[in-house]
Image (cartoon, rainbow, N blue to C red; front, side, top):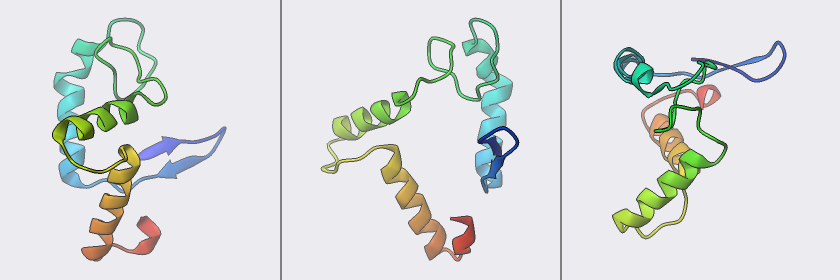
Length: 97
């Protein structure tokens, strides 16, 4: 996945086939149903049909963790670390993490 991060700069993110399959399913089946106004190109949209505001996803994940009864703090960053650990344990090169 290629993510713009500046005027002419891009970050490359390794994404597995399974994850890409789910993103493609979302794009084909759900995103157009969520879109309410002009399409600004955001990949993921809120239930209101607009791009997520900064912190929205982290706030929701934090709430879900709390509701689940898991006794830990954290949100999206916790998943980032968990994913990195899993990738290392399964032989991924450190330069991709």
